[in-house]
Amino acid sequence: MTKLLRPGDAGYDDARRIHNGMIDKHPAVIARCTSTADIVDAVRLGRESGGEVAVRGGGHNVAGKAVTDGGFMIDLAPMRAIQVDPASRTVRAEPGVTWAEFNDAAAVHGLATTGGQVSSTGVAGLTLGGGFGWLMGKYGMAIDNLISAEVVTADGERLTASATDNEDLFWAIRGGGGNFGVAASLEYRVHPLDKVLGGILAHPLAAGPGAIDSFRRITADGPDDLGVACGLVHAPDGSGNKIVALPLCHAGEDPQRAEADIKALREFGPPALDAVEVMPYPVVNTLLDAGFPAGALNYWKSAFLTHLSDDVINIVLDAYANVPSPMSAIILEHLHGQATRVAPAATAYPWRQEGYSVLIIAQWADPADTQTNIAWAQALMQQLRPHLSEHRYMNYMSADDAGLVHEAYGPNYPRLLELKRKYDPANLFRLNQNIDPAG
Image (cartoon, rainbow, N blue to C red; front, side, top):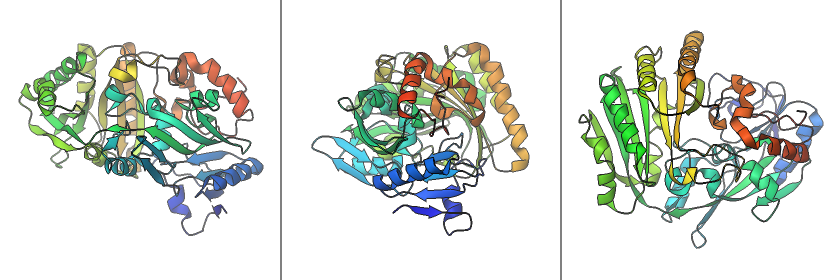
């Protein structure tokens, strides 16, 4: 039987808190689910409540839509079972599982798949929104490795969504987020992978133009095996120094080839920090964790660049020179390889062009600094606007980006709207980057 928590109950405050400390909402009821049957009960209760319904998996999404103020919250965090089948190279995970747990379970058998680069991220939310990760060049995004899902729809029906069962629902959940139901479990294709060449190279911000150019050049013709990002961040040693960090993961089988593929990155500078070495795949997915502490206040802006021009490089470097918080960052991610070889209409997630994502992370600790940090992120976004495409990655959208849902779903929006009207015509699941069935 589903456990129900109300304000004042033991465990209520822990259950309502999510990763982004800016979000401080108080549901009237929290339904703590431990099974698919619990989810069915919770959906029914949420529907009967007549109020707003939220669904929480890992609770990482910056928009904070995993929790409701005064409504009914379906909490999937207790559902953390993982089943690994090394013979079929598949993993089935419940929706409360984090990527740290998933990666560790798969690694026991020398297997891995594309998942979150911050290990505390939940598997369900990241996947339903698309799923960027270190291995997307080699194996595609998380949705490209999803084989099936068990989904509880708005009417409480339990459905299997796969390439052979409820194919339209399977298409919709691969990028359409939580608009169509509650994912009770997700089955992934995993791949043989044990050790990778991974770590971080770093340069002082003064060397930024050349450091970012080295990132641009290596991503222009780099192999599918290599995932590399570029981040403007503060040094983690507490010195206050601003740096250009180049975290990377090379998943190729030949160590000598991997070293050759990153040679250009190592030769520039040389870097002030070279912490790149052979490591287990789960470890490379923890290297960025310290930059995303739970409870910090977060406000993000993101978009896709038409190209990484010198003007863009100068804009982000100037902005970071004046960043108000040492916890903030500007991240450039490279989309390439297998993730870009999927047809835009093959999944609900449409943006398959090779290029770059820019993510502006305003992050701070003192609520008194909120407006200053939000203003910094918004000003930088405005400066970048002439260089941006009209595309959005749903998982990076903030609470005030609701008007951009058409840019998140792009040419696939009309079909998504049809399927929303089929599976959730009353819009029970509306706390997300919402596809409104009314329009």
